Image 1 (spheres, helix red, strand yellow):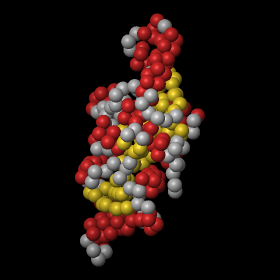
Image 2 (spheres, helix red, strand yellow):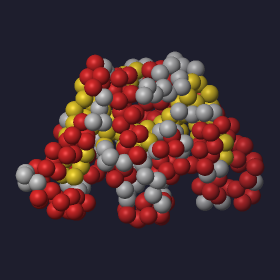
Image 3 (cartoon, one colour):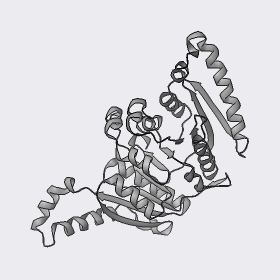
Image 4 (cartoon, one colour):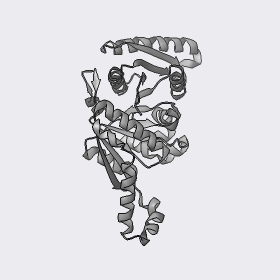
Length: 303
């Protein structure tokens, strides 16, 4: 399945780190010849914390929106690209989701500040909320190191793409995006499955009766299953590789990405309850915070 990004939205909170999202979004819009939107949501609840809204809510809101337009104009002067500003007030995840629906956005690009621990539990994360509510994929950039992928503010390249596969419908969609982007960028595609021993206990017991050791039989089955995810003709336009790892998925994927200098990680999102995610974390959330490169999260509703 060839996937095209015809409408790209960059979400910015006007911080330094969100500038990485704009640079990446500009580069992707040029790569796919897409229409570019640059979005900022004035968070009234954050402004209220300083007491301004108590006295003149509409005046402060309009003043802030006007200031935001000026800031976006200044930021975008450095890029040679047509773009459209999207600025409003409200709850950032909710308003961004509305823009996605209204403007038929195919890809949102956002940066995360990488909160962890109690601060993350109490404040939550706009990025984590977007991952579970957007009707399109979300490309998450995390640090200034991700800017290495952007050359001259005009192009972006992914030499090595890693896709996490757990054989669910969620990861199947991630594989589709991985294959399409690998074709677009003529990338090396790494399809990874992580074996979590507790999950495979019953299978190991079943395989005891076979000729091989249970572990060897399991590895043969999973290798065959993983290889089936890659079409035979894909070797004509990308360099596919499959690997089985063992351990905790987020730890093994981050480690593999580091050791193999991966430029992009693609993961399917299961859409768990946000409170559960904030308290316990998830594989994708942990990879976003600890990984060495951007993460593209996809959800079945994005298909």
